[in-house]
Amino acid sequence: MKLYAQHGYGDGERTMRGLEMGSIDGIIYSPKDISHGNLRSTLDELAESNPHADRLFDPQVYAAFLATQANSRMGQLAESYLQPEGYFAARRRSQFESEERVKDQLRRAIQFQQELNLSAIIAPNIYIPNSCNSIEAAIAKSFLRFTKPMADEVGAELPVFATLALSRDALVNFADYIDFLSDVTVLDSPPDGFYLTVGASKPDARPEIFNSDVIAGWMLLNRTLSENGFRVINGYSDIITPFLGIAGAEAGATGWNSNLRVFSLDRFSPPIPGGRQPIVRYLSQSLFGRITYFELEGIQAFFPNILNGLSTDSIYTEHEEPSRREEVLQTWQTLKAINESILAGDVSSQIQQAREFILNAEILREEIQHTPPLRLEGKSDGSHLRPLLASLARFAELAELS
Image (cartoon, rainbow, N blue to C red; front, side, top):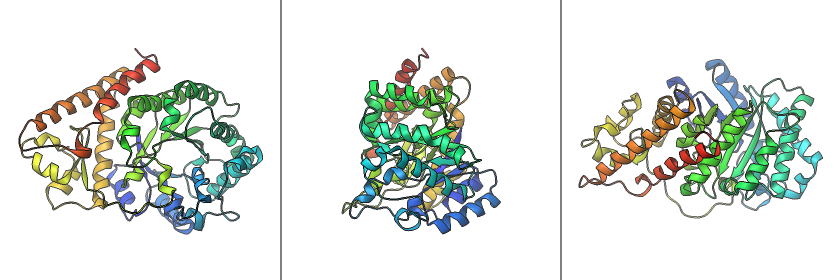
């Protein structure tokens, strides 16, 4: 299974270092966070220095409705990618109720990407916020229906991925979701694959995503599409990535900020005052989750097996607190290793290996919690493990694997 960098603000040399280390297989670029000129030159340099790396571009048209709001945070979308030279424009929902407007948006976004040094094209779509039986879902199906015909019309030679951006609520409204999924798999002229994102209300609303029904529904989406012959790339999947690999995904992605680990339209909304700098964390395979640098420092003397035994451990063990620029290198390398450990054998074997990963993580966490004065608290408490475990059983039931 491939792992991509979810590009965002403040890349620096992160993605290039990740590629050099072999921890990531490509990059999904964010037009919000890089100008058109810099994007073009970066893609050209990447194609020359890392010709085997996948180079993708998420057009982020799902932010078009928010662009009508005062003080929305569109970044470079509103600077470098606006029509008529580009493809992006602020839209009201009613404007995309016109099939001709949908076709025009697809045409502009696909033609724009044809001029870039990409390895595949990601076609745009809107976001389905509540239910798959809604006006937004009907518009989204129009985008899906016309993606491949428009790519053919403009002569696109690269593989074309259709975007399917769903809220977690759309996944748990299950009856409507299943009906929608049935329609997606019988498109008259289907795309080569799908680029999937599942959204929360805010990037830090992790419990909204770490819900057994949400994860199982996301896995079922991957399973259904891959079983029907589609290539499936998941954006913003972070540590859920290996679960999606079990379900047949070709790739997952994660980045260096919370809003690059959990998808949310909130990153385009008007800013809210306040907030604080995130704490540097370490992704532990044996804990199947992140702990703070200071927790790692205190616990590793008692439980050395919380270290991964990978080269990026030295970032945390041989120096003072690492920078956030280094943190994501450790995340990518560890997540790649987890994928390789779980995604071996057939689906049943993979589910069992994922179960053992989680159960062993729970046992280790219990041992830590019962070793004074050690504690794992807050975001390190492991509350995501039970929903992950339950999602495996739920997915097996939905996919009729048991």
